[in-house]
Image: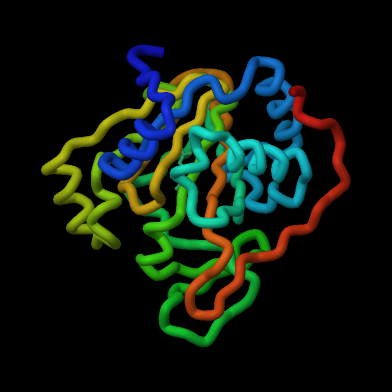
Length: 244
Ligand SMILES: O=C(O)CCC(=O)C(=O)O
């Protein structure tokens, strides 16, 4: 796996997130739990996967486990809730890349008549809009890695510190990358990568066989500005619980 930072205290994680915009939380899941989750996602594999995974109790339970972990808790928004979980599967057979970008969109229950939200769209039947920067600063993405992830199988490349610059134009993003440089974030299976959505990030195509599976959660505060509401989640019947 090469060099992997073993950051693991709540204070170090919070400080890394504040300064660099990302932090690792190693050894969050044991092998048995990773295997269980691999089985749960087996029916869902696709390019950018399902965005509606939170309707499944295995997924919302995993969100609860993250939310209540003392290492993650201090870095989450006030009264945090998981508002989205997408599965990202990448391999030589299902290959894709994402260019440098910030995550600006959030899933909302319904359209609201305010200029605070923009660029409304529908994906897989769900409503999304670009959120105001004050809200984007509060959000936290948590990536649960179900496989060892390194440069050769599509690890994220980030431009550290760029989450502090607010929304960046394409030219500003390229300028930040040229000035600060990119960092490849290798993450072992069973570990978490915590990331501020405004952090500039990209990922390359995989050059290895075998899938790189990531469950990408988004955590937000209970209350949204401008009268907006998060999409309410269905709760599908539980199948098997995550081994303890
Ligand atoms: O998982 C990946 O490789 C990229 C995902 C990503 O860029 C995103 O969620 O915005």
